Amino acid sequence: MFKNFFKYVMLGAFVVVLNGCATSDRNNALVEDPLNGDGTDSGVLEDGAIIVGENYDSYNDGLHLTDVQRAKLQALKQDSTIYFSYDSDAIPSNYVSLLQAHADFLVSAPQVKIIVEGHTDERGTPEYNIALGERRARSVARYLLNLGVTPDQISIVSYGEEKPQNFGHGESAWSKNRRAVISY
Image 1: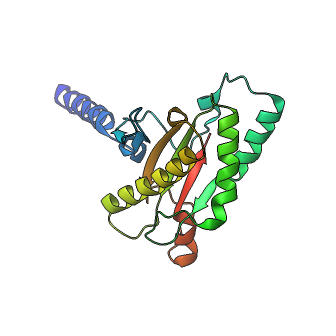
Image 2 (image 1 turned 30 degrees about the horizontal axis):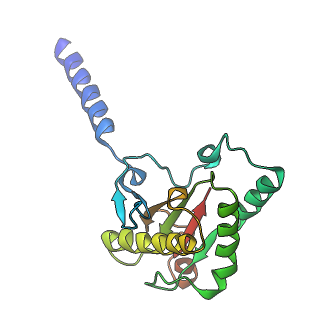
C-alpha cells in the first residue's frame, strides 16, 4: 500500500514540475522598444510581460483623456490592422491615412501607449516568421515615429505564425494572417 501511495505522490510531483516548466507561445514572444533614447534599436525579451490578444484596456487604465479623446480611441481600436503582401514588411499605400489617424491621436495624447503586434501566415519556419513579424511591427512603429509619435509610447511584439486570424490553408486565409495590429 505504501509503495502505491509513494508512486502517486511522485507522479503528482512530476506533473507539478512539468506544469511549472511549460511555456506558452506568449512567453516566447519578442517584445521590444522600437528605439532607444539615442535612436538605436534595442530588443528586450519579456517573459510573459505582454500578452497579445488579451484586452489592453488595462494597459492604458487610469489615463486622463477627454471625452473626445476616449471616443477617438474607441474608433481607432475598431480599425487598427495593417495587412501586408507575402514575405513583405513594406506598408501598403492604402494604410497611410489609417496610420496618420493613429499617429494624430497618439501625438494628441502622449500618455497613451500602444503595442504593435507583428503576424505572419503559416508558411516559412517558425524562426523566419518570428523575424518577419518583428520586421512588420517595426515597420509600423517606425512609420508612426516618423509622424511624431514618441518612442516611449510604442512597444512591438512578434508572434510570427502563432496567432492566426484565419485558420484556413490557402491565399484567402494567409492574406488575413499577414498583418500588424496596433493595440491600445
